[in-house]
Image (cartoon, rainbow, N blue to C red; front, side):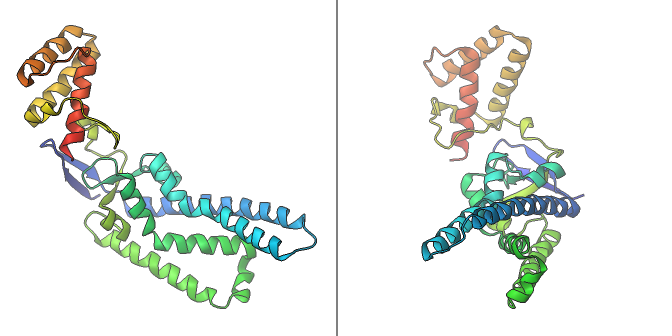
Length: 274
């Protein structure tokens, strides 16, 4: 099993397990099954809607074409929506225990998810093929002679991505390389929780920029103190640490000790990557 070492902003190098190829393959198959079932249901709904109209006008044709497009949208945005809302996982990835993270080991930004999604060329081609076969079955080859070439191109794109995943050190496909993301096992040896890393909203506003005067060692000590004092329910430890930090950084704040230390960690996380 391959291991990727990710340097962090906190002078701690994390180790993550790159998932075996079969995990990615079965995650893709599971996602395709989910999409296939959705498109089957969407196709049945379209048939019900069509069957209610005995006479078709030009307006009906355009309305049905637009409706067909609406039904296709969820299939195309499936991976993007899932990975953003499910912390880097789709249904298939969750079942197979893999997750998308940034090359820095943190949660990818929305822009990284979008770049990765836009470059899923082989997936889009497979989704279109699934839609066509769900609607017309094998007879689609007879109706659309060029479908054979399209199918061939779809699998060529898939083969290209597969070769990149197998040959690249971090198991990255084209979208991962450009988005600077990697896929890891969710049971990775290294854990973001082992550092002072915290997820911070993009619109977060730091309260104490003076925190950047402290070293990584100091920040790790703050996290350790916060976790220990919370675990023990010892308010005095947090209060003593907070007072020392306020004196050192010349901070004037009446914020409760636990909240103060947590805000300091959030400020550091936000400012250290800006």
